[in-house]
Image 1 (spheres, rainbow, N blue to C red):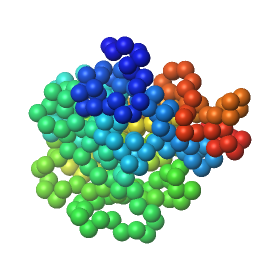
Image 2: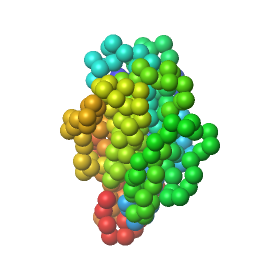
Image 3: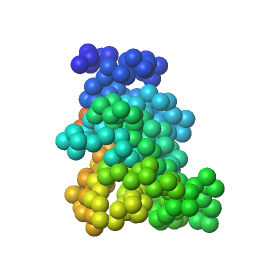
Image 4: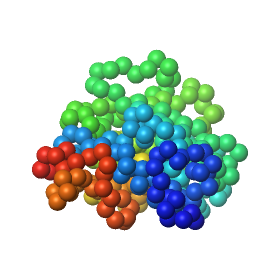
Length: 276
């Protein structure tokens, strides 16, 4: 493990070599301090915005989060698998960057010959048409993300028209960016089940719901089963709690049991009297 002081480094120290040698636990420490240094609060303290993660993403930040997520996987689940039996369902837009790093990290961690395939799940406003690039084998579910102002969105994805390319998949990793109300993540899980039941309705599927960030107050899956699908507890890289520091006029963030850290780019007035 690196010396603790070297793990609490600013954003500009990230290099591929530096991130590659970090353990998942070290990556957690670095990511938490980067979050405190760079994140902002929006919508009266209800939305955490971290540009390096989602809006204008840095690949190494998403690599850090992918290390933390995959480090929590049950390794026994992957011992007899390879890239053809695992797929990653990416809930776009922001989670697309994290999903790519998760697929790559799965290949590294479990010694696959290549990363698993990624299935794109697009989140569309009501009435918007799906991409013409999608195949005819598409399905959709309805979700209500926290960022939609209460409006319903459609989560839609398709499988290749070629029946053979993904027919051996039995483990599906669903990747979202932020687990807030968990509506979108739940929708991604249901979409994954519906999509892959098209191959073999009787096949047992194992679903791993994941997110880059989440709130510890959110309800998690508790080994729920749905027909021929087993859904594990949802996994987040950083479970965060944040709020106003009324004494200093600043804001704080906590994650994964670490102590409170001051947010450099947020202040108490961002919350307008409401802690997250």
